[in-house]
Image (cartoon, rainbow, N blue to C red; front, side, top):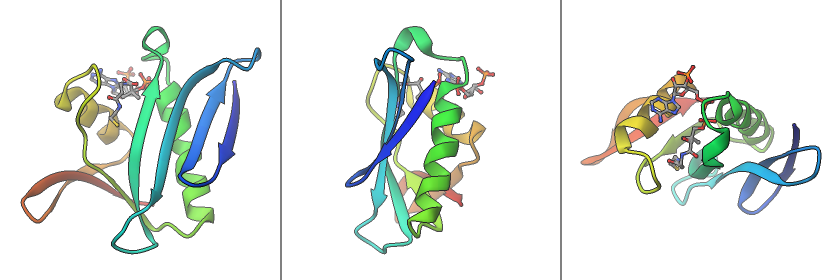
Amino acid sequence: MIIKTSNEPFCVTAYTMHEKPLCMSTASASWMKDTLWEMNRIIVKPHMRRKGIGTALMKTLYEEAKKNGATDIYVIPGGYDITYEEQAAFYKSVGFIDSKYGEEKILAKVL
Ligand SMILES: CC(C)(COP(=O)(O)OP(=O)(O)OC[C@H]1O[C@@H](n2cnc3c(N)ncnc32)[C@H](O)[C@@H]1OP(=O)(O)O)[C@@H](O)C(=O)NCCC(=O)NCCS
């Protein structure tokens, strides 16, 4: 697996040896403050799921986000082809915990 990064919004993509994307994740500084980053999305191709690719992508994203000034990251799960509970289980497996922003349920992690 080859992992590549690019900016604006910050994006980590993993490719096969043949340069076909397996998955991608993006995050960027939130509108609230530069050190608080928001996960925009993470998607792994359905046939490649539950093999640790999402976890590898998130770990790279954490390291690159920290290098770019992030101290905390949050996500508001929703959408896509798996349930909120399944998304939350994934995010919790990579260190996020239940949190709230006002009345909104979010998941957050200190980097
Ligand atoms: C969420 C997603 C990125 C996870 O990618 P992945 O490569 O399958 O994740 P991993 O293999 O690294 O999973 C790590 C752990 O997360 C948890 N997990 C992952 N998918 C899960 C699911 N569907 N249900 C419950 N737990 C899940 C498990 O604890 C898993 O460990 P295990 O397989 O040993 O049980 C993938 O399911 C996906 O692309 N979903 C559609 C897009 C989406 O919902 N994105 C999140 C919202 S932005």
